[in-house]
Length: 155
Image (cartoon, rainbow, N blue to C red):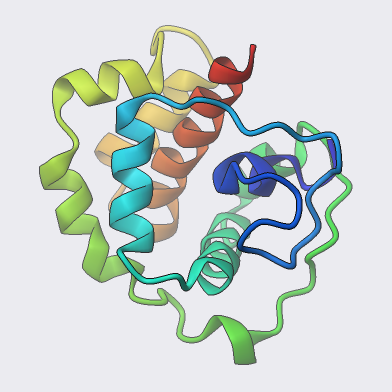
């Protein structure tokens, strides 16, 4: 699916809340509460959805590890290159949200979100989230786990 990872992170039907391309046959998944919780924290209560998804995708593409996972399902991406006038500063306020995510996501949430961490890529996502000290990797691991969890919910 074109824009695979972004489409799953948004998990919105084509044309809803975004003028970004979403495949016309995409059907949003019923995602677990932990995914909904993470998205509420990341997006907050304001409808700045388009800006936030651009910020998140810029963060994911900022690291070789995460970029590789973003491109793996389908390398067709329509939103590159990024235009920084829309995205903003390097961490886009995401660094301020990280402590809330770390506090709010419980061990039970992690089990549901990351799945079987003895298997790849779940182990990589979990290790990035739990042990990395740099924001793009730490948050990247969490966001890629959200994508994987959403993908599991679709099947």
